[in-house]
Image 1 (cartoon, rainbow, N blue to C red):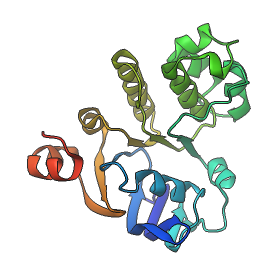
Image 2 (image 1 turned 90 degrees about the vertical axis):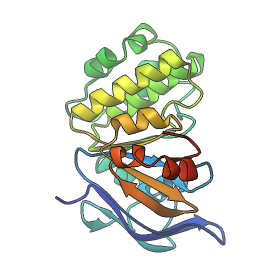
Image 3 (image 1 turned 60 degrees about the vertical axis):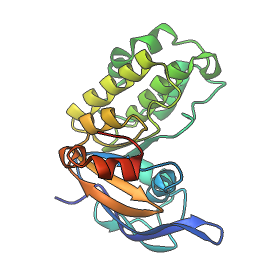
Image 4 (image 1 turned 180 degrees about the vertical axis):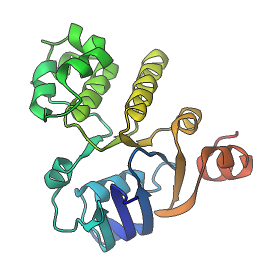
Length: 233
């Protein structure tokens, strides 16, 4: 099965510095990947390189098997890659509905479906983005990404800074998206939640893939979890 998005020997960084070093990664249709690692290990840099916001220094990014080097970020998005960035990136001066409609493309994820997934957005339909709580902004960011009808949804720090009840709501929604057949890459510090959701875990250490495998294998190795993630099983 051809990967939706893949990296082959991918190296990237900022200015003269190299953050990623020889990353190999496949994101297959319908797969959920937990992208993990301590702070500063290259997770966000990898996402930026995969989606075209950061050029490769070496190696390749492949989009459905084709070299994506010449494809800018907007062209990759049009081919089914949606991102919920760290910091959410909602349009502060636009209303909830304007944020959603701005991203809309034909497909199964309609305005009605997104609002049924996030009833609170319907209740705040006329509110501007900067009048929403952090949790509501994250709902809007996910809803806006789904309105593009993606094949792959990437969430960078999916629940960062959210209250426990709101975190639970976001995890609930990610499960629904996963069950709908959308491939998902999720970055989050809530290790237990990521492991309960993911089909496969990829751990970055200093810009390299240090470990990849099934969540159960990671849970079975507390020393590995503590060394690479700073948590105990």
